[in-house]
Image 1 (tube, one colour):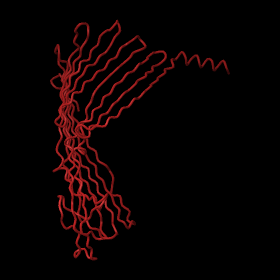
Image 2 (cartoon, helix red, strand yellow):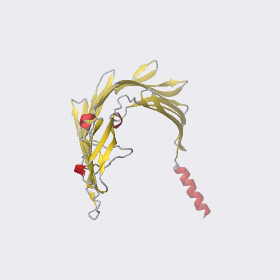
Image 3 (cartoon, rainbow, N blue to C red):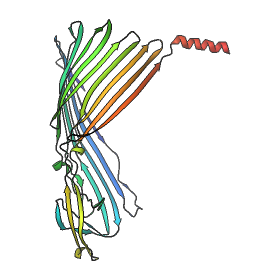
Image 4 (cartoon, rainbow, N blue to C red):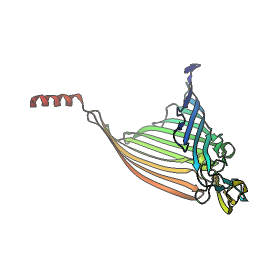
Length: 363
């Protein structure tokens, strides 16, 4: 819904919701009692405001705010019928007496997530300004983003684990997102100048931009450059270069700890209550707060042809280098070259009429 604000701007508010329609998936004739269920729900609120100004310098100011919250839940079960197994259950490092799982039990796997995200933007744009026969249009603003998860996370029942002693004694423990995953925030400021003018009596467009963002407590400079030069009425060339940073996801920043359960004494008498399972648990914390942001360097060079009579075609060369910082100074770099060719041919009515006459003459 749009509403005029003092005849100088508009405001738009929207609310969206989504939900999956999946039901419980189970086979009543399956003796293993396999069953799965998933639930996905989300709601999003957005508000956008635009103010127009009748000023010599400032043309318009726009703001946008977004907030979303969701629910992500999955459940799976499977009946086990096997030999009793010893298992550890503590979430600390040390030696203790574990317990034996019965040979028959219903294994359950549950994951509960409650993702929350929000963002706010303030953008300002100037009118066309002329300096030294060159037109300038300035854009500048600020952006704030945040995300987190308040779900119960990985719900593990020690009496009904889905996975037992995997890969040398690894077993799952409960991992609560609300207690273990922090909210992550980012703030960014940007400035851009779009220039229009003539060079050697040919028109050109030049974009000079700079963005500075604070992600994971680190400042990231992100320059951008784009250039388009009109050679004549049919041909033009363009170039661009930019550097962007992307912060790691919450799953990479806050992975769940890994637990290694090493059996020291395994005495099973045939009865779980009178048996002894002595185990040593090693807890390995995997918090990756030192992860750096991934950096992308991208360049583009292209040439374009456009004719109202014939059609249009373009040839572009892209170069991209992605530097993914794993921990502090260790990094992986990916380099990629890509050619893209686009071709569009328009058949004008006179050509169609000529072809039609040739066909009639041939018949």
